[in-house]
Image (cartoon, rainbow, N blue to C red; front, side, top):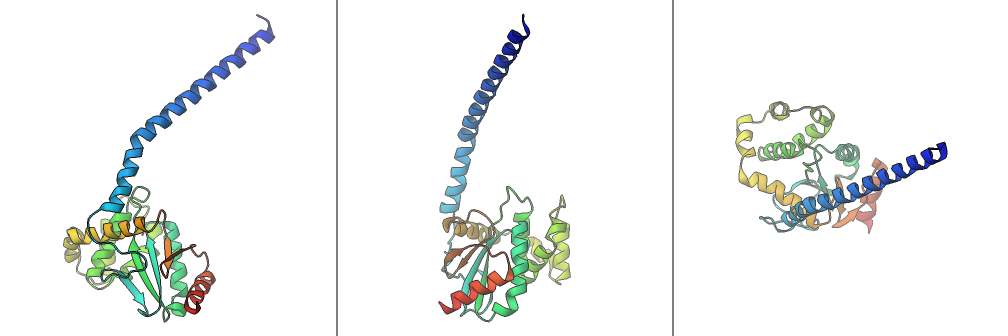
Length: 231
């Protein structure tokens, strides 16, 4: 066999190999769609049809966690305690808070993305448990400020219970509350509220009921709030 024929044979073999890889990839994609498609549908249906009352970003529920001026513009945040972008948003809001707290009512709603952030759901339950003892916002701050540390842990219960102790809360009561159906349902209802409102990632912000781009600077937050106040 000449060298030219040998090179041609090699090229033909490479082409056949490429065609086989493409065929395998298409087959795997079809299998993934067949297997995962129903799971996505189930997740969306759960978000749309699950139990418990949900509220849109226009509505403020009695069970919502709020701070600031009840008569101010409504800033509803759907967030995940293990989401790095949410921790950044928390930092920006904290820096802007003194300047906007008199004209803003901040509302926090849970949207834990457990598939991406394995500790997000547990963090949400501890925040809710702290809220039952009157210190939701203090636990909210501790979870975000320390996020980089506890996110790297394989097990976070002891760390979170340490935050409860730091806040001088009843740890045993919190353990009981975390297992309660109504606490868990609160988190699920927040998720369903977000899903129905178009939340697909975190953080997602709604200002006066309208989804707005996530601010990346403190100045953007100030401008956003001031514009809503004067409009």
